[in-house]
Image (cartoon, rainbow, N blue to C red; front, side, top):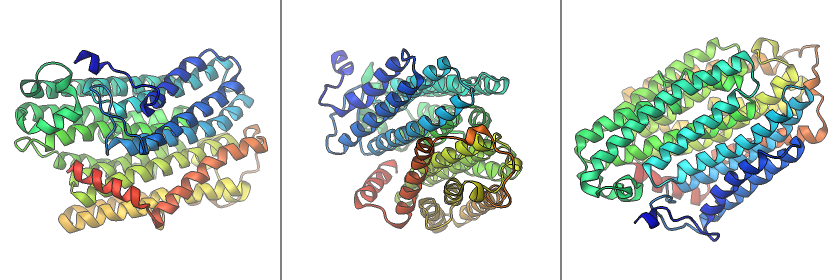
Length: 496
């Protein structure tokens, strides 16, 4: 049994490359002195990880006690590696601009690229772990790597944000650990000692026999613990600071990927709880936290004066919508939640790509000092406009389709819940559109900054991921491939 637990994937197994490439690259990048070489090694490693993830579509490896691929995590692995690749491409341009402005030293750059690959490794390991303990360790490791990157600029504000992130999320992860232990104790009398009582693939089939009282208590701790990492209100306060003070590419992967990973962990536990007919119903708790996050973020959007904090609160809003959808449950609401998770990842990371260039060009993150983007930088400005309108839920973008499905499925089942949901979405829409008008239109400021004097190659690298993401979101709003629809439907049924 122990040999089977510690069995590692062979070279013909895509998981070996999906996990091995970022882990090996993290160590290799730590010793590369030339930041230019490191930048392209980072891009190549992220691209290799994405290509390896595509192999899972035709070659799904058998589950072990340590790793597994199933209908739920296969697409999230592909999505995570794709956004990781496009963000690495954007990082190449962003880091070149930061270096030209003398904001980062060679040591900081070496550290950044190494931690970026380590971060990808921890997220992918969390998604593919078949062991509750390994998944917990992976999420904790992801927290530590991002804490270090949030403090990269070494300013007072960045260090303060990193400490706040570390303390709050460590408390949350500690509570999640206690919940994980309680699930193990509930499973142990049925599954026996050892790895079997911690393996998702084995637990789900026998969860009906677990001790329901322990499962109830465990889910409360898991919800608070992993909910902190998701950024759900009232556990959200680390998120705006971490987004505002860290490098913008890290903001993109924090919003677009890490929040998904934490929610994925929460949903895995929800599946175990739901499989036990005598345990509590997780849905109402998720609905309450989802609605509270939506309303808190919708009102806070009107008061933000920092462009990165603005979209950090937008992430809280959308994670609230996704959590609400999974709390409602059922095939249609779960389908909408999965689609919204995907559309938010693509759109929000695209927005942070644009925000990174905008703040570099303007020399500030203050919304009041950013004007006339469509006039001063048309390609960037209009890309930003499309991305913000997309995340606000304007048709025909994919976010509109997923939000429409969430609202319509709620109206069909619980009309009274649909009213506050729609109201919260409208409040957030108004806040984002009003802020967008201030930044995108009007007379641009006369002052120009050296940050914006980048080469043509750098500008292309910075803008390509933005437009690629928005193209995918637009296509998803108009047409979803049959394979993707089938995947959403299959997972929606599994989630219950």
